Length: 182
Ligand SMILES: CC(C)(COP(=O)(O)OP(=O)(O)OC[C@H]1O[C@@H](n2cnc3c(N)ncnc32)[C@H](O)[C@@H]1OP(=O)(O)O)[C@@H](O)C(=O)NCCC(=O)NCCS
Image 1 (cartoon, helix red, strand yellow):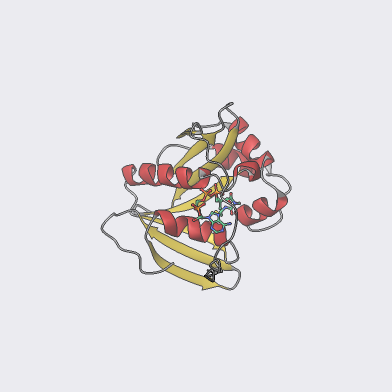
Image 2: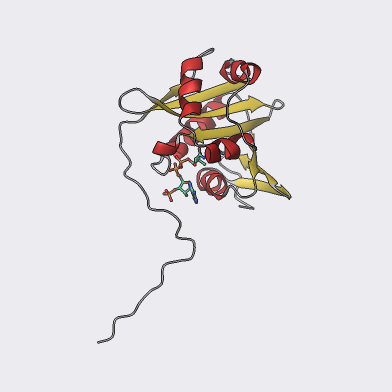
């Protein structure tokens, strides 16, 4: 009997890494610069460029302060921690108006591909809903397949606008709204 060879789908991309269950996620408090710094330190130059849309060898004091200045409503963030307490990722929302909040997520390279980004996104979406937002807006580099796939796998993406190297994705926080784009 001849074996049938089924080719892997061309979308096969990366090996899924083990997902330890004991990563914890909690809301970030105001002024937790140590968490911010630890996560930034764990991002490779490539991850920093994807997150900040350009080479970012360090955070300026002003940006660092602004990223740590959460208030739980117009600027809220959740952070993930490894079993030993090391900060490994942050997802944040910054209110654009009463209904829309801008989304940003980062996971340190050593922990990417283990479900941390998904957990952070789910947690920040829950917080965003509770804070009254209807939609999340993510400005991503068009080449950032990981973030695009992650967002579409967690929330219905209702609008995609690509302008050269930048793409703006809008995702709904309302369960009834269905996906129209990805
Ligand atoms: C994008 C990022 C947040 C994803 O975090 P992560 O912890 O690696 O993602 P997860 O392991 O939770 O992946 C969840 C799902 O997202 C999708 N995904 C994540 N990375 C992907 C990639 N590189 N290619 C395709 N899909 C990807 C998959 O559907 C994945 O599910 P699966 O592993 O079951 O297939 C992370 O890679 C990162 O911090 N990148 C640098 C900063 C950045 O790009 N931030 C976004 C700009 S705001």
